[in-house]
Image (tube, rainbow, N blue to C red):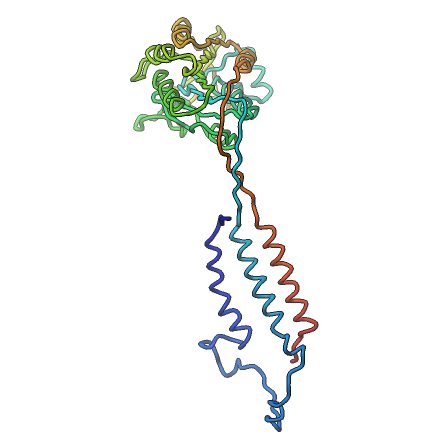
Length: 372
């Protein structure tokens, strides 16, 4: 057993002065003649001393004992005791590293002017490529059972956002916290001004693939998958994407991570929020103004990347197609030797504390009530 908040045990240091005050009326260094307890006088003190106390007087310590034990149990409950169990777990699943493009081109919306206008007239904001990809990833993560998920975000650089994990709630929390570069800039300030997760001025596909592969190489999982979601060509990597893909393709089938490349937003109808000369987004009625955006993705190069890694190439022109392609991911096998299960144990000491404190109060008000 362990305690989540062990510093609550410091409250036990307050119990001795508390009970001293209850017994003597006040602490010695606070004693004042005017605060002294009332006393009775006896004509024959020797007779009083010779008298034997009754059984009830001999048991008068019980309320104090119950009170002390109740406070002790209450402190234990506040310290939040927990027990840990270890369970062997085996099942079907994958080790999945997702590489998510967060370059500024992911602000593009793959809808026509008419479709965008209809959404705006309904008070809705059209979802850009990044928001669509994040929604699909949310659904994908919530549907996992046994798959370990990790995330690499990339644009001008590539970062490990979170490593392989079975904690899907934590993974969703990290995913929800991502902020895409809005392309807005200030003259005297470098980088984005909207608190973006990563600078989106370029795209480092090769570095993202290398980071994902390195994480999977350190994993002992049997089924390994790299998912690449991008809408652009590599133009900022230190490692060329094709070199990384060729390295994957040269590995043995049993060791090679399976690469799935998802090229999104390569259709004909694409719009992107307009940026004014002052570096801010152009707004009309409080909503972004969208202008035509020409996608410059070299689809053949992305396909070559997937072929070199002996992986799968998917191109998605619509949200619906992207969701269907994502649902086609295969399943593999993994084995997790130990899983820690934590059980909260504060309920029992809390119940004991309440019972003891109530018992002490009732006894002091009835059987062991003192006069005056």
